[in-house]
Amino acid sequence: MPTGTRRRASASLPGRENVHRVPLDAKSIRSFPPPLKGTLKLVPFRSDVLRGNPLGDAPDRTILVYTPPSGRTEGLPLLVYLPGFMGAGWMFASLPNVLAESLVQRVDRLLRTGTCPEVVLLAPDCQTSLGGSQYLNSTATGRYEDHLMDEILPWARETYHTGPVGLFGQSSGGFGALSLAMNRPGAIQGVGSSAGDMAFHLSYTIEFPHAIREIRRAGGVEAFLRYLFQNPPPTIRPQDPVACALELIAMSACYSPVEGSPGAFELPFDPQTGILQEAVWARWLRLDPCQRVRRPADQRALARLEALELNASVHDEWGLDVGSRIFTHHAREAGLPAVFEEFPGGHFEHGPRLEGLVLKLARALGGPARPTARPLGRTRGTGRSRGESS
Figure 1 (cartoon, rainbow, N blue to C red):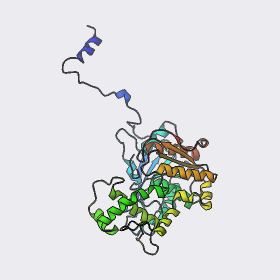
Figure 2: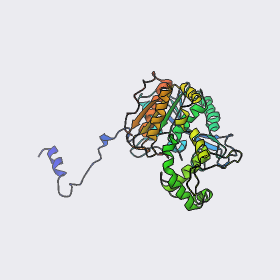
Figure 3: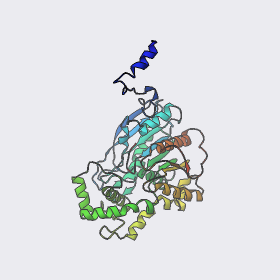
Figure 4: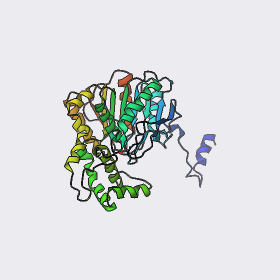
């Protein structure tokens, strides 16, 4: 009997029918990322701006910095990733993920394959005791806009001698990127928002009933936070009542602080009756990117950008795909070259979306000519957090 025949026969012998092998040839660079070609560092940073913040959060932060395979940084675009609610840059140093790529691994793949011009990637830590700062200055949380724009960016430019700055982020980070571009005209050259918080009348109000019930059940905001801080749950799952209450408390500290009373803030609803507090809600809406993009001063700020990129997934649990469409519609009405793309999946399938933003911002700020704007809502790619996941 020929050798090959014997081998095939042996696999079918009694007791050997359930013998299998792993198809090693099927391993892909996306499922099994190789070691990084670029360099990843976690850099300690002591903030003067955050010292003595109202929540007593540490001024010592850790910045994630990725530099490209060539080792060159001078003149390269500085892409700053703003994580979503409860996220911090150092979280993305975890390598590797199982059958998936982290954001750093995605960027490394784009650079090693020559798909993307070289960039320097930076991700700050702007977390607070409540989960996040929305990258804003607030008397209830601290001066996180100033921390990022007046401390971290100058430090990065001086240390790495980088060129144009692109801000991009997921969820709360997408809100932060858009807000900072409007707050600091000319300081940023490109913006990418992946399911950024906007259209507040759609995205936040769906959580109001869950938060109201949870806060009332706990006996008030302070009682809710006291219990949560002393009895942290193993996980805080998005859209659970505890998560809804914590998120809206955090947003209130960012959007509606009580001026002159450090650490104090107002909710946009009465936690006992659920009645909307119109004056407080109006303060929130003034910060909504879908409202801001209709104002001439903010339009002029956005017009200075080299790239204005938005994307979202078509089944976003907070309706942020709809919010991104609204923003893009108003931006284009104002003559701004906003580009919007949709991806399959939900809010948490954000890996491909972020990869797309990196590629677009890198090309616009440091590589070939900027791609032509696509039709509103074109679906691309395959497409995780209002919180964070890769």
